[in-house]
Amino acid sequence: MKRILQILLVSLIVLIIILFFNTLQLKPIQEGSSVAVEIPRDDTAALHLSEAIQIKTISFGDTLPIDTAEFLKFRAFMEKTYPLMHSKLEKQSFNQFSYVFKWKGKDTSKAPFVLMAHLDVVPVEAIAESKWTYPSFSGMVKEDTIWGRGAVDDKSSAIAIMEATEQLLRNNFTPERTFYICFGHDEEIAGKRGANIVSQWFKENNIRPAFVLDEGGMIDTEKFKDVKKPVAVIATGEKGFVNVDISVTIPGGHSSQPEKETAIDVLNKAITKVRATQMPPIITPPLQSLLERTAAEQSFLKRMVVSNMWLFENVVIKNLEENKQTNAMVHTTLVPTIVKAGIKDNVIPSIANATFNSRILPGQTSDDVVNFVRNTINDDRVTVKKQTISLMEASSSTPSDHPTFKMLESITKKIVPNVLVSPYLMIGATDSRYYRPFSEAVLNFTPMQNAKGFHGIDERIGIADLSRMISFYKLVLAEK
Ligand SMILES: [Zn+2]
Image (cartoon, rainbow, N blue to C red; front, side):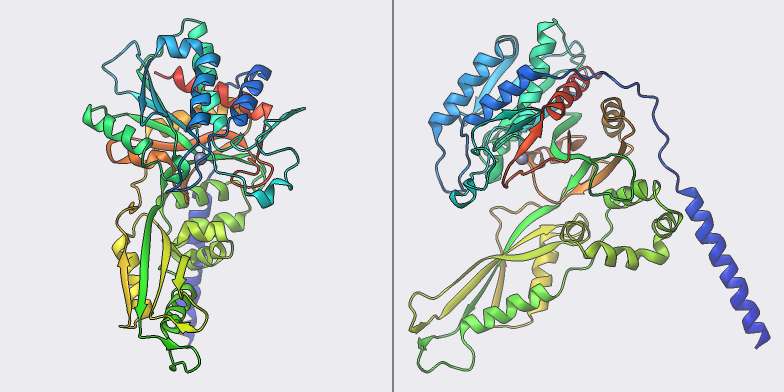
């Protein structure tokens, strides 16, 4: 008995030593020696963004046409507002309204960099319009803020890139490397006619970018409550996308005398089963980095938990699962988005089907998703099939020790005092997904802080944010 107690005591001491050792290893990333740059408030750029917002370049839906007059108006606005960019850079258009500007660098032996943004925006629902503080496409500039659809997503990026380019051209600046500036016109409906086609042109011409920068991560001072500094998250990878159709066929009949189970009943049970459980969690490398970098700024207890994932992984995952955003970072998600059955109130339909939309974590595949759905439903009457048309497997991630990540980290520290920079995994999808297969590094980040209202009500951006974004792109363009 005494011997057992001794063994237990020794084990406990060893455990405590390991926990403490690992905890003390987790230190904040050494601050770079970046010197802060002064960011001038750019009221002219604010007016340009306001003008851009007023042009309704809306992507209504996959199968709905766009208003070409508005896209033509946007082209005219670009030509009028950024004349040097249009006269000095090589310009091409793809499917009319997506554009690529080539800015030839001094050293053409170096692989080029790509800056991306999209020119289209999502519509505003009629029912939501009255809830906006200012009309949704007014581009109202009030004190320090620019209001309207696209202020955040993503006209501010497009405007900031064009302002930075135009201002540098005005000073006769030439970048060291060649830059391609790519603007898509249908990102909000998956970029099939825009970024997809442009990326094919890159491949056909054997242009392999060393770095692609697109929208995605931002600066946050609200969500990471226990970190007492702004957190800039740079996405190093993104989740995949697959739709899975399930279908049930059971002869229907008159609704006055239903069978025990109808096609709708079986479909309903299948959906409920899938929704009641989740695919196995994964702590991906970007998430692990985010946990470590933020924990390093927090209490000893938090540091102990994150630095000893071999012991606490389940606790961490449980915690992350409590919130829908963080849950999506540890799980491949599956949710029904379309359900169809029935044509008449007194006829039991013979067919019922549904579509699950799934966002796939790196480390899992669309086949894993299909197998999970099939095994979970476990009912031969339900056919399960994946759609291939919009399928996109999860991307490979750019490692956080890649030189371009360090480059963005150092630039961000120059423009945001006392910032903590971290990789993370993007749970949505952007146009940059098309570039991942043939680019060395793809990162998603714009330095706006606590962005408000994108895809929702009262979308807006501070003039300070827009000014910071212009400085940011200038620094990127000045990189060697
Ligand atoms: Zn966007």
